[in-house]
Length: 173
Image 1 (tube, rainbow, N blue to C red):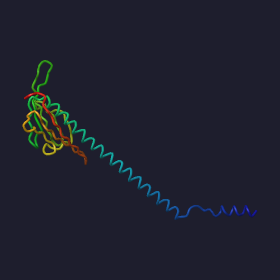
Image 2 (cartoon, rainbow, N blue to C red):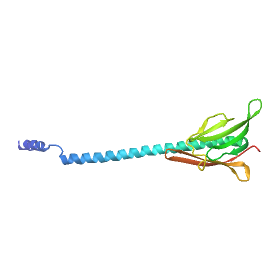
Image 3 (cartoon, rainbow, N blue to C red):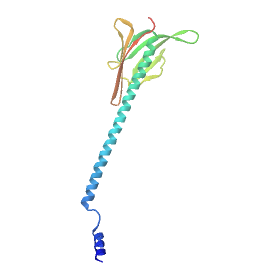
Image 4 (cartoon, rainbow, N blue to C red):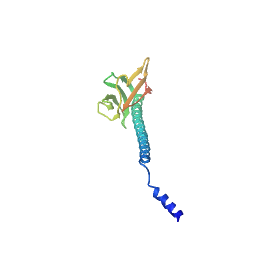
């Protein structure tokens, strides 16, 4: 009997956790939750920054590809004035029966680079483009009227990307 009474008394003494133990566990869980929230916020910010950088890079490459293709097939090329248009060129285009002359202008307005053919508004080639001016420019290489330097920069959110292209005309002028 004494053995059973001792066992029962042991069970009666177990009453659960003390207030201090519960507060300690709640404090630890709160610290872990805050650390996890900070980690997730950092990961989300890095992803957003990478997306912005990727978008800026895509826009610069797109603009460079359009202008390079047009300059390479141009009969003559004119560099633009800072703050107005980037460049202008004339090229021959095969219409199916004969060659027709096209005038192509590249303008940047409110960060959008537009390609105009024969003064008709064309597609928006790229967005988030700086300039024209110091960040985005199109110049002829001194002493070589067939080689041009295109410097182009795109800025989106806090990310920016710039690239310099050296473009050679394929046709003589």
